[in-house]
Length: 329
Image (cartoon, rainbow, N blue to C red; front, top):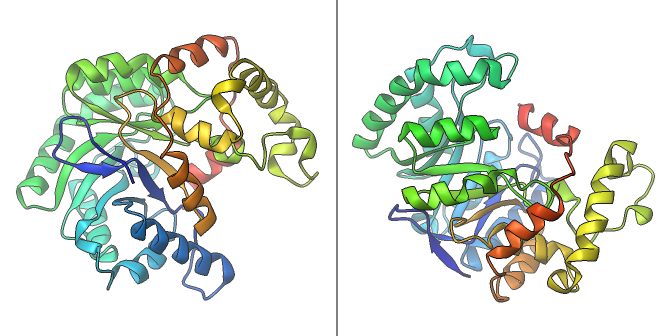
């Protein structure tokens, strides 16, 4: 397993950050899906993955708790947790007690002494820049003070944020309160690379999220014509996605090689500012495939700009299943 320092933190993290969003049932069950997810997490830890992503919204921490409670590598693991406070239901008010409550829940569920990274998110209703940009200015000082208090208690390590949009990302960087950003970044969604140089100059880190565009950028779904009619990616709304993907595959075929999945994950980590990619992993085979993919040489940094230029005329809608997953509680 390859490791990288996250920005200018003291965290030496695995290039893969295990994402458990769909790795188990939402309630404790002894079902095939959950057993496969547990096996995947155990295998990832055995392979040297030391960075785990989780959220109370996913409903899968029960599986992680079962793995981590007596795992010999538990003390070596760094955790990044999703922390949406305020959420849409908070009527644009920041509640320090709720912020700390979510952290305490995670510490208990994950058998952890500290949460290394908080993926803080601020939501409004509707969750739009029109609402969120001014909201940030009203609450950020309280958020920072609350984080500093919990850092002094030893509960948390670093504060990063998931800004949703580029304007909110710029605002977050300019505030000076964060160790870096966590945001969607993949072959089809490259807009956040506009902030990479700014992040680098400030010594901040970036964690790509959704590197496989919810499964589109995988060997299993690379060819739209081979999808079954009930596959979510066979919907008409994905025609433009596959048109753009076809252009990328034609233009960058040599770099992609025999595996689109491997290329997609390596692409997400091509720029030096990208330290660890959050990727949903549900089976041992998926973990094994990505571990081997990252044993290949790092892609040249300029491939990010080349892909962005090649896809600059393609404005893709947020995947409907990504929207539902983000709000799924």
